[in-house]
Image (tube, rainbow, N blue to C red; front, side, top):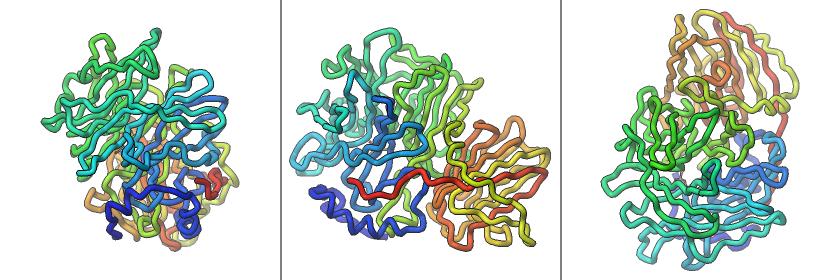
Length: 493
Ligand code: FRU
């Protein structure tokens, strides 16, 4: 694996054209996605600032142009009218090239549209000459014509009572009031993960620290919370966050999880009262830093998108100088004590041709590069090998036992294996058996929706040419469609 010097990781981007040769190389990769967003070069991570404004969805993401490395982060801007096809708009927030508040990265954050502008809240990742880190909560505003203006001073600096790990401001409007909150992920000096709450009655100034968010029962839950947010869905509050350095049953040795707690947020007491336990949001291998659109009108649902990747993980395309992509946008609703996560209905627009799933003599059918596979499952055990060889063996093995109490996804059958130390199997108990699977494959990803949104498993996958078959066993009925391209390969910085 390539070793990066600090100078190489944090080099400023002076002329976008210098990325062109890198892009020309990367665009030839067989693993470039066709309907999932990915960066033109380098590393993409968290989705940021997801909002509806000026008749479009706006989304930004963390981007380090130089290669598959967590170096100098920028915000890259994309837009969509239907959440299915996307257009690249290019760079939006660029780190200061001098000694400014965000000189070593424009880190994650959120957005709020007011009048004809979008306000962008982000963490300015500052490093002093001696490489001491300081986190600033910063603001910029984006006009319709693409003009971006960073405010000269941060809204506030770091809270001295916590460690340097304070980031990912999420802007929240308290319903029925004109009070705004910023929620910041943090790590305490005694290594506990938490969220800090600031408030103001003006989006642009006057921010005050109120308190650490109290979450009874979760005082000691991971050592840092990244990307925390509270969403209001179907009359319930949902605290979504990424607690770090926890091990969770069914999730191998992985230390990075994105999950949620349902409950009630009492803004007067700054306490989130949990109703139930912490749930994993996505049971697959590669999903993190999920963000919800900030201003959708329908109070019964949220729209979520996540980074299909994990911190501290290496991927086969690192060698090709790019890594990371975004998940499909998903519709979240609350059912009982859980979130239900479905692909947006609009995704059906991408279905192209209905393809034959008749098996060859070895019991496998051929997969195109991008497809949706739908399987209706009846009683008994089931197994599906996606990205199998022509004998229907190997690949990603999805299985459920005879009494249908557990579904598991095992990726150890793939020829290109990666992040194996985190464990190669993920499991999820099934409360009502297995009735349905919707599987979305792209050149280098798989998203498996179980029982109409009851669970989802998202993973990167890097199949070889010989691994483009699928086999299905059990009492079931399979349908498959090839998928249209939704993301244009285009060099735009
Ligand atoms: C999560 C994260 C955030 C941070 C950003 C930097 O993946 O570590 O906490 O703001 O990525 O790119």
